[in-house]
Length: 165
Image (spheres, rainbow, N blue to C red):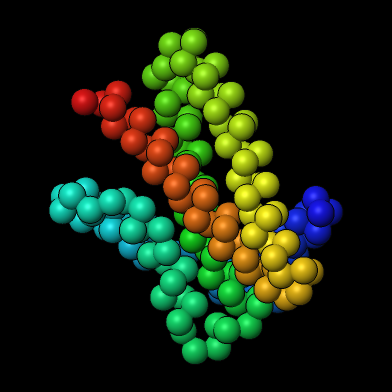
């Protein structure tokens, strides 16, 4: 099962790094506008009192609705594009937190992050497994990775906000 999940994620990486696209034309590469759309959603949700979780899908969902994006590679590219944004936000928040926490909390955060990565991978492996190796496994895994990474990024950003208040 792990090898299937690894193959699905590796396939997604191959698609997102395919040499047939120039970097700026790669459909899995987020644009400044994509990053700004998520930032705007977070800002407006915070100001309105809405759950920030509603911002997960801000980039991928409209991408999936575009004409021609119903193929397996394009479904994966849409989710991968947004997952990249959330992963960048997660890594930035983690780095900032590690710079602000005392040693005990740093150790706790590091252990949490390690456990979260394992849980994310198992969760997404499980979702992909429902496709029994079919073509839907790749899009299911990348959509899961996007969603789970978004949730974790928002959690870490929430931790940061506690420290800045």
